[in-house]
Image (cartoon, rainbow, N blue to C red; front, side, top):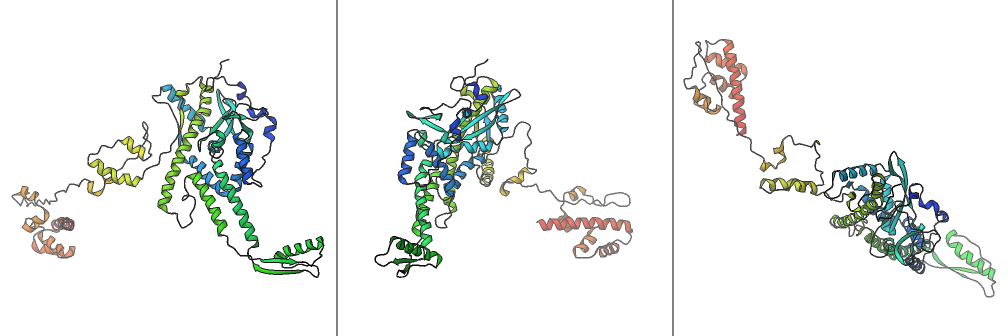
Amino acid sequence: MVQILDQYGQPIQREVLDEPQTSRLGWVTHEFADHPSRGLTPQRLHRILEDAERGDIAAQHDLFVDMEEKDSHIFAEMSKRKRALLTLDWSIEPPRDATPAEKTQAAQLQEQLRDIADLDDVFLDALDAIGHGFSALEIEWQRLGGDWLPRALVHRPQRWFQTVPTDGNALRLRDGTTDGAEPWQFGWVIHRHRAKSGYLTRAGLHRVLAWPYLFKNYSVRDLAEFLEIYGLPLRVGKYPAGAADDEKATLLRAVAGIGHNAAGIIPEGMLIEFQNAAQGSHEPFQAMMDWCERSQSKAILGGTLTSQADGKSSTNALGTIHNEVRHDLLVSDAGQLAGTLTRDLLYPMAVLNGGQVDPRRMPRIVFDTREPEDLKLYADALPPLVALGVQVPASWVHDKLAIPAPKNGEPVLVAPRPDMALPPELRPKPAQAALSYRHVALNDQGEVIYPDQAALDTTSVPDALNAGLDALMAPAILAIRDGATPDDAIAALAAAYPGMDDTAISEILARALFVADIWGRVNAQG
């Protein structure tokens, strides 16, 4: 049997292809979360974070899950951060100077990766590492024909893991031993996301968000208590000297209940006095909550103006700047995830289906994080520059506008009038056709009436009429020009040429109408 080596040169465990590693853990997979956010105090939060640094990370990651569930602002901002990557196109790119075999392998891996069910969910689960510092997806393999392909990539809770006491970056599965079990190679996609520098247990973004989360919880609780008593009068119960404990308890219940029920009973001899209504304002609590949420937005998205519209400081211009910061985060998230997927998913698929592969020559997944430039800006700027002789590479334009270059034989859009794509001042001027009227008048013997026909051919219509060269049509043209009807024009021709038959007069009239029309168009354009 051929030995299969991982990307570190170590033989993989064949069991990884038959069953998930977690199927052997037993008790860990049946544990329930402790929900440490319940009754959270600064002292307890500090202890949870310290325990994680020593390798016990279960409580820390249970708290991180609670934070996203209980704080809608954290959930919304983290969802923006993670789901932004789902909008990106991706591809499998061969290495530099790729051979035909490497190009074929890249195309094959791309097809196999696209066939994975719910691939967007895989990306989303892996990006859970932004908050936690790491995210572990267990691969369940299946054999389809002659290929080994992932049947599913299942997200496993972070509480199933631990770190080695002597190495905060060594991630292990909790199996009851001190150091834990090392995850099987080819069995896991473990995405370690560095939201900040430090050991794995301190690299998660939720470590930064934990304190604003705690302070906001205090403010929300205090605001709720304030709203419960706001506007209610202060009630003071007075009992006589020598009252027994049960009588005091009865009075206390009456004082507490009368504020809500507007009714109550007390023993005779006792008294309830109503003082001024509870005063105060919600603004201090709201100010603290707003500060916490702004701090959370800054930590998650790099800014606040893309997530809050308070009507005071949010503007479109500032929001655009903050969106640029978010794009920097998107580029970082995409780059880190691409490295993990190439190492933990593409490499095993390539090795299991094609033999040993040099990790340095592996095809890699690439997310397209380019921002398309303003099309209108470039459409207005490029034609004049090109017309002035600036040499603009087509590849540069394709890259700036995020327009893919056409492949061999691929249909492309073509302008039916390329000159119309240019600005009006750069369009070529249409050639002005010389308008002239050529009229050849023949006598009964077929001879040309005008002896200088060549001069007549090069004479424009207005000049010809002004010079009186077309004497035959002149009566009709002049009549039409003066607003006469076609019948009046025929009468004018008949009067001018009494010996001419009706057919000849009709022909002359048709030519006169044509010349008059052309003359009118020329004069209108001029």
